[in-house]
Image 1: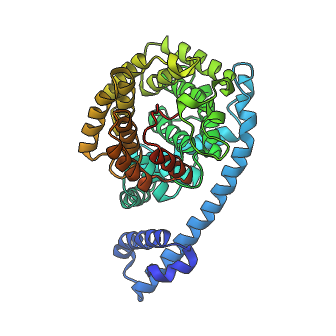
Image 2: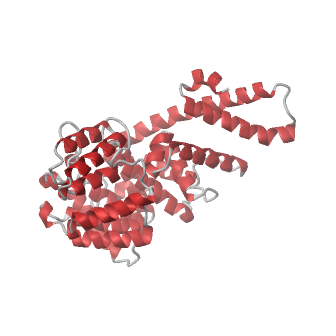
Image 3: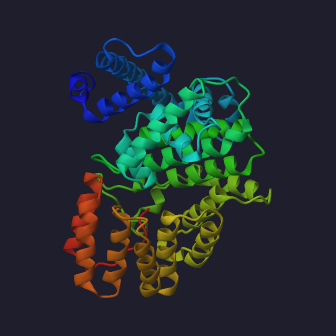
Length: 405
């Protein structure tokens, strides 16, 4: 059946997904309506119809995303001086309501986020799996179960009313953060940056902040995005390869964005309800406020990462905390944390862990081990830009380095 669908889907992943979906429908319909005279033909036809529906939807979503991306510059102009122009109507608001529709509480949080990313951005299963640091197979199963769960519960996946359900806000924030993160450092493809994704995430986060002015995490997420996006122009060189944070031309950072992000963060922190996005924004602020790399308050950053690990731990947080600790207490201290993280296996298959280890090993003068770690990272990197960057680092393992920006 999968082979019969390949001419329609153009790929095995979608074909397998649609066949699984057809079998699930058979389990729902046949006990009630009886087994059809030609069961195999019924399943194949159902799977084919499902494939056509998916392809039509993807085409529509891709067109909508392109259209929304084109609208983003106007949205981004809505800062402190033009916030009123970002009212609750318009395309960004439509995207926000669709996002709330995907984040239905009947689904587990990881499933909501994955489903929303798939529906809103058109990211493939492999790309979403890399964002979640899980295997493609695991993510495929998660997406399948999410869709099946909605179907069994007769929950329509559609835009809800203007009354945005507050219980869905955490999942909406998570989706926006992951969407921005994927645009900020793409997990696969030719380039490091995907401005279409960061623009879409930033525009929608700004719209959410308008709807929820007293929500410190919604405001904190917007501040975080602004402070990170302020460095966009300097994060890659002319060839599109990554530029380390310490090597970036800070005179080219977007001062208006930094000012807006810092002001937003200050107002949010005064609410005294800190959360993960506000803490991450505070870390970004430490970088943004340093006139030169040497002035970076790494001790404060290490403390903030420790707090972030306490309230929202995870392997990515632990990796960044290790880098910060290395800047404060030396590479050996950071390397101990990275080795402990590697022993958990939670970042197996991800290039950032061996890349960070390679950097610290190089600073310790353990060039052979550093080279081996760079080779490991090189084999795992998902973008051409990162592979070129790591190849250069491998060629000069004697070079020191700081956190990538």
